[in-house]
Length: 312
Image 1 (tube, rainbow, N blue to C red):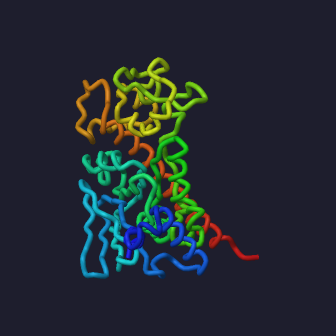
Image 2 (image 1 turned 90 degrees about the vertical axis):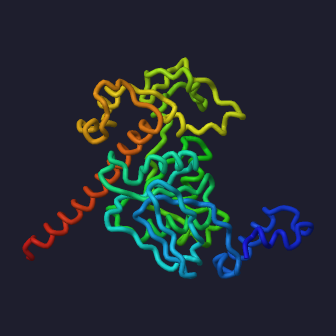
Image 3 (image 1 turned 30 degrees about the horizontal axis):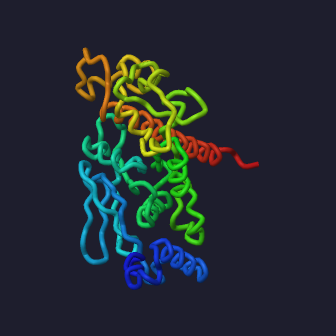
């Protein structure tokens, strides 16, 4: 039974869905139980993409990951096993469903700019329990050489979502061990990458974006963010910007062999849209993968040296 089912048993009594949510969480915390132990499950809304993940269900069904399409993340109680292909090199958690769907359309989980394939996950905003449980499983079970990365807005809402994934929530603190992902790293979007213009949050008029900052956001194109503008995702600014290809090379976001790998015409002077988003993310993810591999290599090297030291 879902929390929504409980609410509709007697909507006059409960009045609001939030009342049911709080009662269920309070009962679970009081008896130190999971929601599933109470026979209550939350409706799934999270999505994943990536052919490297296959989910086997207790019912006998199978959820196959796809590089170009999304699949619903089932509740943990419905999952029998997770099968992860050996070539998986990263997990990317994306705050916005719109950005997630853009990445699906270009098959980003196995994009040619990446040095390894991955799995992409979204909770479609504030994450549900099923999504947090899946990311927690990745964080706990995957080796340290496979980084768990997050792409969220550089605003209070985005940081809150990052915090819930990484540290857990106060309301479900009693389930922190199964819902938090301590290994998660924030790779962007950072406010400093858009432009330091003022102490106030900024909104970009994307129709007149020029190429002065990393993503073509100049001072005259920025206006203070109003209350009605909080729905504007800073992540989407990247997709709407236009940046000279030469500048991306200069800033290290493009490697020297980019054109040969992506069949980019040499006369193409600028990059925009989903291509720019792919370039931005690939540079961040590749750096994280290389850093993780370096740490593992150093650890192995130090272990070998310790073994070779003669005993006194």
